[in-house]
Image 1 (spheres, rainbow, N blue to C red):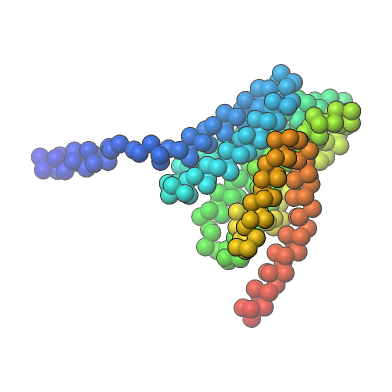
Image 2 (image 1 turned 90 degrees about the horizontal axis):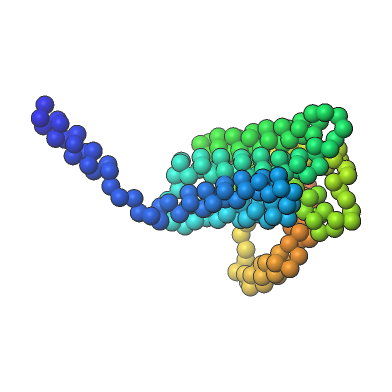
Length: 266
């Protein structure tokens, strides 16, 4: 009995050891993104739309960074994946939907319609994230070439794209897009269904670049950053439009490769 007790105490002491602070960096970045997304809602209540959109973009940037940092430091974990997914649900599901409701959807005369748009978008975002989490455990069932495609629009991109009318109204207030809440609601539904759908879209993180094109890509990246600093809303609107236009191309390429893969098997 005494021997067993000593063994248990020894194993307990071994399990309690200091955790290197660098292992927490990805989760810290995720929490920063969570705080940014939540605060964007707060500025929405104050009708400070530019501040709200800026914080949403910061949340998107941090969302991209936390995964990269985790893989670079080799500290990926199930805990990190779960907290990242929960942060994405708030930042790119709840936050943009609530902000759009506060901006214009609440003005729809028919009671409850505006809130219905919010509910549909949030539910579709939850479906998108739940499917992504489930696919993490079935990744072996996908072929290597399929890793170059997302299934549906990623929640981060969807959360930014759905606020495109608000960003455009910040840059061009004379357009007065907020006077068309039903149209914005329909656009919101399209983005929501695109997230929850199984439409194949390009995965940028899986794209490869030829070595002789690296300098060109870096130069274009610098140009994009400069445009974001000078005219952020126009730049994000342009990039979002290009992404929307790329979806039919991604669908065509995906099913062409799928057909070729089936032919190779036969």
